[in-house]
Amino acid sequence: MSTAKKQYKRVTVKSLVDMKSNKEKISMLTAYDYTMAKIVDQAGVDVILVGDSASNVMAGHETTLPITLDQMIYHASGVIRAIHRSLVVVDLPFGSYQSDPKEALRSAIRIMKESGAHAVKMEGGSEIKDSIKRILKAGIPVMGHLGLTPQSIYKFGTYTVRAKEDAEAEKLKQDALLLERLGCFSLVLEKVPAQLAEEVAKSVSIPVIGIGAGNGVDGQVLVLHDMLGMDHEFNPRFLRRYADLKTIMTDAFIQYNKDVKSGDFPNENEQY
Ligand code: KIV
Image (cartoon, rainbow, N blue to C red):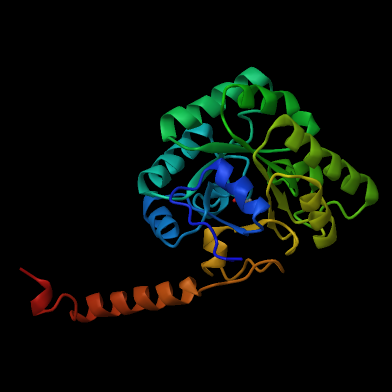
C-alpha cells in the first residue's frame, strides 16, 4: 500500500478534515503581512492564522485585547494578497463577537468580505455557542479555540497552563464536543496538559491544532515571530526556535550603520 501523502493544491477546510482522517499532521503558523505570508505560503505551511497576537508582536500591546476589527482586516488583507495555497483563518478580535450573535455575524461578515479570508477563529465554548451557530449558519467556517484563551487573560490572571484541575478539564472536553456538534471545522487547544489534549483530539472527528498541547493532537501552530527567534525574552517551554532572526537582523543593522557612517555604502556599483 502506498504511504504517499495527498498533495493539496489549495488547502480548504475540508482538506484539514481529510488530513486528520489520513493521519497527516497539519501545520499552521501566524502571519500578519504580505511579505511574511508569501514566504509561509510558499514553504507549504497548510494554514496561516492572522492571529490577534498581532496586537502583541506587531503593535507592542501587552495583551490581545486592544486590537480592533479594522486592524485585523488590514492585516488579513495583506496576507490574502500573498497566498496561493494556504488556508487563511482570521481571529475575531475581543469585543467583536461576545455581546450578541448578530454583532458576531456582522463582524465575521466584515472579515470575510473586506479581507477575503477563508474562515474565522473564536475563543470560547458554551458561552459563545449562539454566536458560533449564527456565523456558521451564514456559511462562514469557524475554528474554535479552547484552553488558554488570551482574550480572557484578566479572568485567568496568568498565562499558565489551563485545565490542570478536573472540573476545568471536564468543561474543556464538553466544549470540544460542543464545537464539533455545532459544526466548527477545527479547533485550537492552547497550553493544556498533553494527555488531556490527546484525549480531546481522539474524542472528536475535527482536527485539533495544538500550541503547548503536546504531540498527541492533529497539528501544531506557533506564532511566527516566536519560532523565528525575534524576541529572546519570550521563552515558554513549548516554543521551538527554528531560527535566530534577532541575531541575524541585529548583525545586519549594525553592519549597515557602520557602512553608512564610514562612507563605505554605497560604493561605485551601488549608484547610478
Ligand atoms: O492569536 C494567535 O496567534 C493565536 C495562536 C496562539 C493560536 O490565537
